[in-house]
Length: 219
Image (cartoon, rainbow, N blue to C red; front, side, top):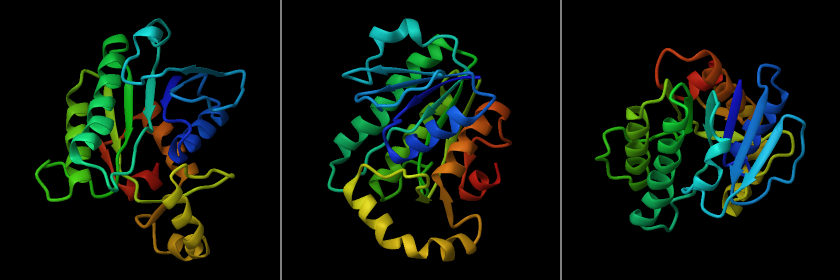
């Protein structure tokens, strides 16, 4: 399986990249982002682009792909809806539309979030925008598309969040991780489990297009 990963410098993307490079079923991994991941592997190729929404300069490298793991995302804290929409809906759909045109047999796996609003009409801004993004992705002509909705994600293997307040929260709550894990498969996941789940649904599919926490941990 040949994969492309967007957002490999973020916490979720780091986990996805790690699991992809360890998976014997993954033959080739492409990484696309605004900054270099600073990592080298025989099965890895990286493309640094100034504007991820515009992939015209590397389109020739983006065909022949079986799946996309889309891990790009930003916090909505303190952000106006128009700007959050630009960075979430507009950017994601620009990338996805290009990939669907180049790879109609591709499986697209999108990391959304727990509480996403599929109705697009709720009071929570980020949830509406995420819901609109999910719905638009499911309408694109991919072979398959899956929406992952993780909640609390525990970073493993030295992975850290690049968002300061998120990393601070993870550091403070770290002593609670064993207790949270005992609460059940719907309470918490890890970067390792989420990365493996994304690859599993890309390779094998899943009975439904939207995966909540229990689904992610069951993959």
